[in-house]
Picture 1: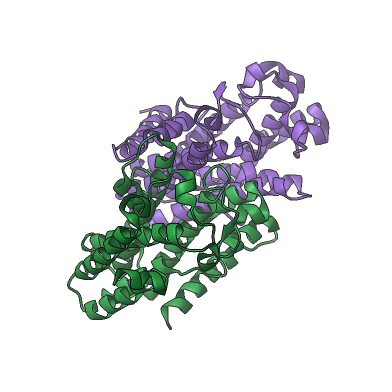
Picture 2 (picture 1 turned 90 degrees about the horizontal axis):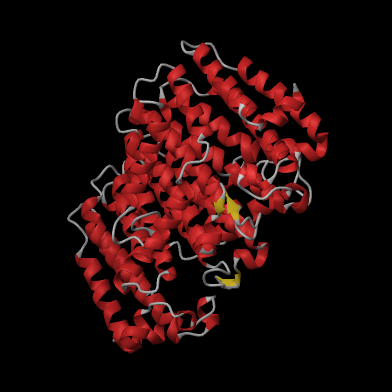
Length: 289
Length: 289
């Protein structure tokens, strides 16, 4: 089964378990809206690619780890889009969750998705229970305090923030968790896999900054120019668009070099090359060459 | 060590692990504000009382379970108080988290506390790793979908809600998790402990409704009359204050009868009696006698 199918099936199964008449229908709709139809699923695909490179022996564990990573990502988007943060009315080319269902259900859908991620780990590790604790720690570390997504987002509430630290927490942390969790789900030590995830996360963030600064809204499915409008740190604003694109190329190359020695290293490097080449629209990528 | 000391130490240790220079100080302050100084800690004390009744053999696991339950409770208060829900400016006799730190940090503090709860479970179960999966499932079930706190809160966004189901999810679920997690932390089967938690949760909710309808704000440290003002389901509005107090007495008695056979049953019954007698201010409790 290809990784996209695995991810969509696991996410659908997790959401399906939530569907009971005792659950308010509006909350379920808001959660579904946040998770489906799929975005790029770049993090869970990375998680499964690392699990495969590590010689995955318990696919249900990898599936659970990948789904948990994606549920956390979806939750963070729902809360980031809230009026008290980005106030974004659009996401993935359609209304954001709070625009479609109101702020109360957006807050609750984000909360419920965070919880569902841990629930997916607990139920998905039945075949290898010793892997649950490291996976919970990896996931919690990537999302919570002191250095996860929530900490990164909270730097936006401070008067000064270090750009590298802010981006590492807000974006890099979940990419690093994707590679670490991929390894841990296959019973491998997660530590050596962290650098790969960090570099990919930074590359992804730089690409996002460039798209925000240089693209049209229709191309990326959400409002553009938000970093400038909201006074947020941005690699494109700091280094200029060409400088940011150069940085992105360095990071992509650094990611490929960061793949630890393992059986499936060659296939994984090919996956990373293909993913990083798709981070920017063709005409922007050409500008860097 | 008494249970209050155990709970405060475990919560302090969990917060301490979050304190690093890489974490935005405003977020840490908002989280601390939500957790300290202590509220009644009724849920974690119940969790530890059940663990003791079950012949607790790994106190660190009970500590982690109790702290995780309380962190979830604190998180739910922070999000419930937000302007898009109760819009409560006061909590425990001082400003609510969003009143003190703003909405963005209140949303993020709640998120971070949810994650911290699972982190506490993962790190606290090192001595008995097989207990992690059931504890994660119990906690996630009590907070998420389809029948946890978040589902209960989301019924407030629907046009019609069943009072019993709403209260079971919004309040009963975490009390049931407290008793189930207490048992699971001691290596006992959690199922037989659920009814006790459900009855205590319902008793607590009825007492809260009565206080909201009959007390002065200064007595309970938060605004009163909110159920009526917000059109929320309330036992006091439905049954009248005297009817609700009668119901509370029935539930307290039912809770004592629901204690499963175990070594420490007598001490646990005494704990429950003492706790339920303190649910209402003296003059209201006298009105029921």
